[in-house]
Length: 117
Length: 111
Image 1 (spheres, one colour):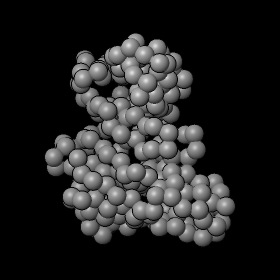
Image 2 (cartoon, chains in turn cyan, orange):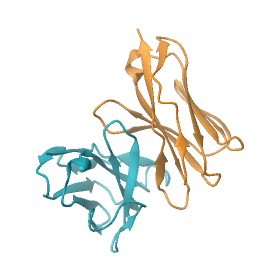
Image 3 (spheres, chains in turn yellow, cyan):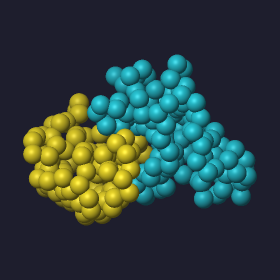
């Protein structure tokens, strides 16, 4: 499987500020996704990061709050904007379409643990 | 709304026993089914995936899928304390590659 690197691994941020999370894959991948895992909860898909076009957001998530970039097939960023304590979660990057793993396997980065104070 | 249901547990089994984890899903269009293991404070790691009705075995793990009943399960044979974790069931439609996760079942394997 490909190596997925997420930065930062954790951060503590002030209310009202923004944080950009990076996801780097060591090989080209077809699709990249961003998930959120709130404390004690399961994973919820935020959006699909599309290379060369605007991200596709799931119900309840909007671009103004979670802008996403995907400049190429190995890299994506998720920004959590104007943060509030309710944004405290683990944010996870996921990739699929790995050439050596088949089209329908999804692998996760190590996650970014965000605490908003 | 598409849903994936799991019993939150905890499911407690003695070491060496078989642990049986269950999952139901609402969308009949779901094509791919995944089991992830998540240790506390860690990201999910893929254990198994299954696409066709029946059983799929990989070492101590067996995934079972019944599309008619919209039911997928994971059996862990010879359970070890190191298997203690939360197990997440996820489903996907092939065309989208997006995963819908259940809430997870916490498994405790007692030494």
